[in-house]
Each structure stands twice: as structure tokens, then as C-alpha cells.
Length: 242
Ligand code: NDP
Image 1 (cartoon, helix red, strand yellow):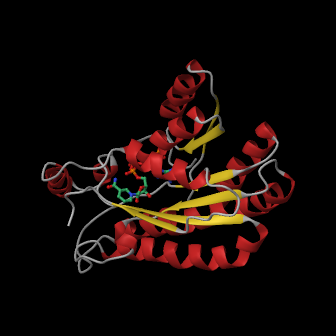
Image 2: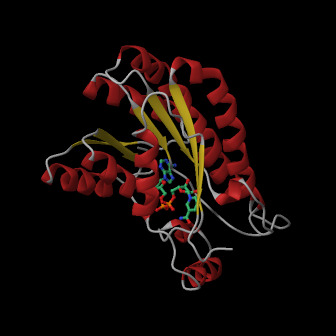
């Protein structure tokens, strides 16, 4: 589970652990990950914290290797770590663009690439004879509004990558699924300038947003389908979101 130190990733790690999965929780903030492992273990689950900056391919690979060493195989990967830094294209600080493309797009691709051999192996040798790669995109990967062009681009790329990979591996029983949440109340706005953060948090007050547990439920549904059922894509939004 990448991006597990907060928000959707944390919620999904808890949900999958509650279903009996041994979970590796991956992000940069080790204090948060250690707290999450403690929480999972208190309820009888199994979890392992691995600190990694997923924009670094070697660290993404190492996180996968640690998981396989710890648990013996890899059944499910949820590539969720991401950043959303909003603002117009003209005049943007292009460092913000690199942060998003290097994490949301390339980081997710490194995670998928490092996981693929293990997921394909477990789809043959593992007890369920099917494995899952869930890619967390966004409504921003399906529709564009002005003011977040590079976030949109980073997530549209996930759609193209995921569909190509799905076609390549689905007959080998590795299911590739895309989850596209609308507004979820998390720490995502915090990476923005204070004025942008304020506008983003204001948006949360205009409707009853999704909670991380709502997206976690969706992901848990996807990865618990029977072997012959592949949920390719789910768009999940707050009811009040237009
Ligand atoms: P959070 O900010 O709460 O979570 C982001 C996670 O990504 C954190 O665990 C963070 O951990 C991790 N992360 C950030 N940078 C790196 C890095 N370089 N290497 C490893 N991990 C990293 O936001 P959300 O839970 O909302 O976001 C999760 C995903 O959901 C993202 O892909 C986002 O685009 C997507 N999404 C969110 C929506 C929303 O409304 N909240 C809507 C649609 C999609 P750490 O800082 O410890 O590394």
C-alpha cells in the first residue's frame, strides 16, 4: 500500500488488514507508518512499515523486495501515493510540475514495474490464482478543469498506462484496476500555497465529501472479487459533487 501515512492510503491499509491481509505500508513519514502498524497489530493484523521516496526507482523496488522477503509473495498492490499542487500553467513554478509527474506518474509506474513479476508469479502460484494492481487516479484523470493542468496530465497518464498494462497481463490473471475518487477529505491540500490551501479546504465545506474509508471500501471490493471478475474502473464521487 503506497501513500499509507495518511488519507486514502491509511484508510485502505486498515481496511485490507481488517480483511486479513498482511500489509506493507509505504511512504516517507516513518513516524506515521509506525503508528499505523501499531494500530493494525493491536487488532490482531500483520503490517510492516517501509520508508521510501517513490520518486526514486531504487526505493520503489526496495519496498517491493522487502514485502516479498517478509511475506513470501505479493498478491495485491495499491499504487496510491500522490500529490496535487494546483495553479495556472502560465507562471507556474515548474518544480511543482516535476513533483507531481515524478510521483503521481513515474512513481506509480516504478511501483507497477517493480511489482509486476511478483504479481504475475502469485497469479500462477498463489492460493487465489489471481492478483491485483489497483491504481489510484482521480476524477482529474477523466475530466479537466482549468487551474490544475499538470495534476490532470499526471492522472490522465495513469489511465493510459493502466489500460495498456491491463491488456498486457489480464489473461495471466493479474487484474489492473483504476479508481477515480472525487473530493475526499484528506491532507492533500497541504502541499499547496496557503491561499490555494484555503480555497481547497473551503471546497470541502460546500458538500459532504468522501472519507478515506469510502475509497478504502471501494478498493476492498475490487480486490475481493472472484477470479473471473475484473473491476476495470470505478469513478466514486461525493453525492453532492457535480
Ligand atoms: P494525502 O496527502 O493524505 O496522502 C498522500 C500520500 O502520498 C501520503 O501518504 C504521502 O506520505 C504519500 N507521498 C507523498 N509523496 C511521496 C513520495 N515522494 N514517496 C512516497 N510517498 C509519498 O492525500 P490523499 O490520501 O488524498 O491522496 C492519495 C491519492 O489519492 C493521491 O494519488 C491523490 O492524487 C488521490 N486522490 C485524492 C483525492 C482527494 O480529494 N483527496 C481525489 C482524487 C484522487 P509521505 O508524505 O509520508 O511520504
